[in-house]
Figure 1 (cartoon, rainbow, N blue to C red):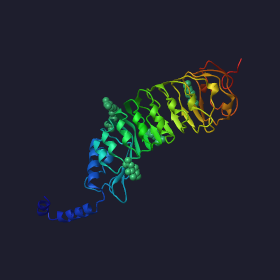
Figure 2: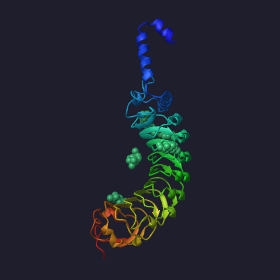
Figure 3: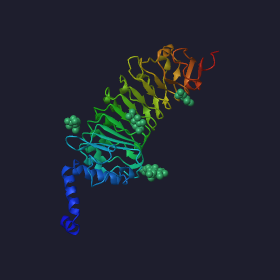
Figure 4: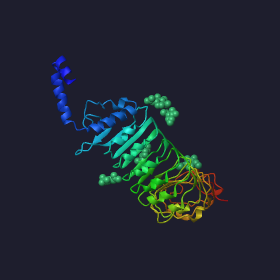
Length: 334
Ligand SMILES: *[C@@H]1O[C@H](CO)[C@@H](O)[C@H](O)[C@H]1NC(C)=O
Ligand SMILES: *[C@@H]1O[C@H](CO)[C@@H](O)[C@H](O)[C@H]1NC(C)=O
Ligand SMILES: *[C@@H]1O[C@H](CO)[C@@H](O)[C@H](O)[C@H]1NC(C)=O
Ligand SMILES: *[C@@H]1O[C@H](CO)[C@@H](O)[C@H](O)[C@H]1NC(C)=O
Ligand SMILES: *[C@@H]1O[C@H](CO)[C@@H](O)[C@H](O)[C@H]1NC(C)=O
């Protein structure tokens, strides 16, 4: 074929020699290029990936925002798709990028279909975000094979099913975000095995039921978001003087416990408990906390709102609809 082209078009000799220079010096590993082109096809050949041209070098010529190669091995190590106008799925060919450390897909709204099982082959993966997509199916069991992973963010998707207990095998995990999907079932007891390394846990805006596992006692998250589920029971064990937690989003559940007995870590500054079944009174020690957010509206609390500190920072909307709370910002006690 090469000969035929040369004989038909003499000037193409120059062109061909240029090409062979390019392919000799091309950094892009041919296996990586093959996988990347499959991925592009899976995404529906979006315009945003127009630079992904099979004739050019993926490491040097393809848009830097979308991928990068390692300087020594020339293998693809990061893949990022942000705000891409694409209608398609994530190709199983993703598993054929064995050097991939970071896969970051954010705001690719019409990306649908499940997370391909071949992701389990990416043993070097440390960062996985597939967020603000229409990705569906379960939170896959096979994620537990990604032993090096420190960050998982699958928020704002259409994931269904339960949280796999096997995620507890990800002993390097620091950050887990599964919020804003359609997950059901209970929070697995086994997740407590991820303490103390896992410090960010976001499970909010799902349809989770049952109690928060008591195996979480003694665990200090930086942030815990369980908001807008159907969780119930006593979660006072998440609180305590020795906790380093600074943000607890627990609103819109069915939690029921006596607030008067709680103590708080020094750093706690965001606490949202609105729409639960919490009873008792607000302890005076609350005035010592540096509240940026404190919301206990729509509960069954009673008694005087402690005055001072950051307690009056928020208006009545943080306290209204309780059994008998009173004093500023609500009307005075009788
Ligand atoms: C994505 O889906 C929405 C809703 O179905 C549609 O309006 C929009 O045009 C789609 N985007 C693309 C790039 O096709
Ligand atoms: C999201 O995915 C589902 C199937 O999983 C499909 O029915 C729906 O049309 C998709 N929505 C968009 C906006 O792509
Ligand atoms: C995790 O990463 C280290 C260092 O990059 C590597 O040596 C090790 O093989 C990886 N573990 C797995 C399970 O691939
Ligand atoms: C997870 O993804 C969401 C949506 O893209 C983003 O807003 C959030 O910051 C991510 N989480 C973190 C803290 O990296
Ligand atoms: C507190 O919760 C109520 C709902 O019960 C909401 O209307 C209000 O905006 C919230 N305020 C803040 C500051 O979060």
